Length: 56
Ligand code: FES
Image (cartoon, rainbow, N blue to C red; front, top):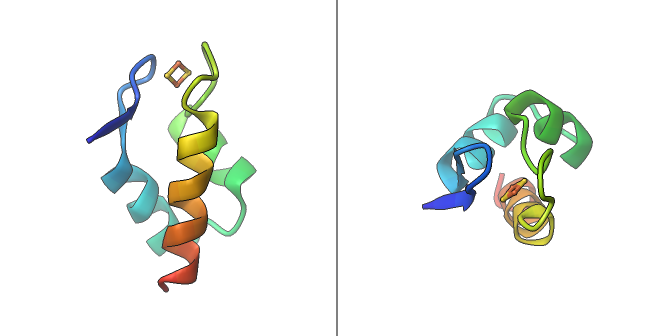
């Protein structure tokens, strides 16, 4: 499912970035270019990031 429409980033990509060692939201955000345009996806993207980190 697309989380960031501006940059075409999916929830799977966020989960994958965490699985590959993304330890901070800032790092994952930078890596995927997430939430870098309108910013509307920031809150849900962070929730998915936190959830992925907890489920590791
Ligand atoms: Fe992610 Fe716009 S939806 S920056």
